[in-house]
Amino acid sequence: MTAQPTTAHARATDVPLWVPVEESLADEELARGLMNGDEACLTAAYHRWSALVHTLARRTLGDVREAEDVTQQVFLGVWRGRAAYRPERGALGGWIVGITRRKIADALAARTRRRDLVTSAGSVMLLADGAGELPEAALDRVLVRHELAKLPAPQQQVLRLAFFEDLTQTQIARRTGWPLGTVKSHARRGLRQLRRCLQQEATA
Image (tube, rainbow, N blue to C red):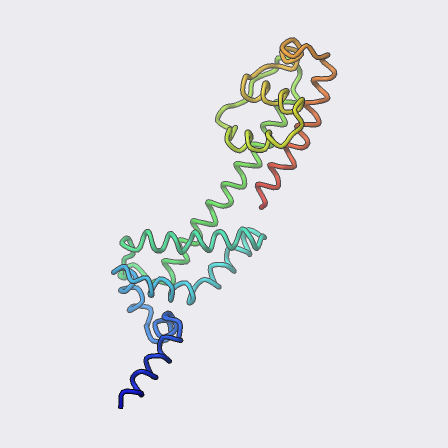
């Protein structure tokens, strides 16, 4: 008599918790559980809609890894924003698709910002001596510093003086004691490498 409950309990614990939840709950019930902070309902929502979210992201972004990141961000947004969901305004699936569209837009904006950064950096370094300053609003200092650290020391020095001290190439030549031609050469080589790194960041 006691063996059967024990065996049944053992079989039940072998089954992933989300399976009966996902199979048994209607969307409305799933939404209520999610709003009440039931993590099993979040897991069920992930298994029910993650493929759709990933497909939408991949089709728009054209990159599988970026689509995976967006999918994670979407369901993190679902969990954090669950209290804002209003069933009377639409189905849970539609709400999740709306979050997906916003996260895709965020990913595209971040991609554009990084590409603009590359363009801005290139424009400044290719200008004639004294022709303008690096626009601070376009420069993501943290990202650039990270990528600059990968360059050879002379290229780092030239680009740091240009990016962070707004020096012209002539001023850099005076500061370092290097010939102007050497400064320009380091700037060109460093900028090419920096562009490659930033472009990889934008598409990674």
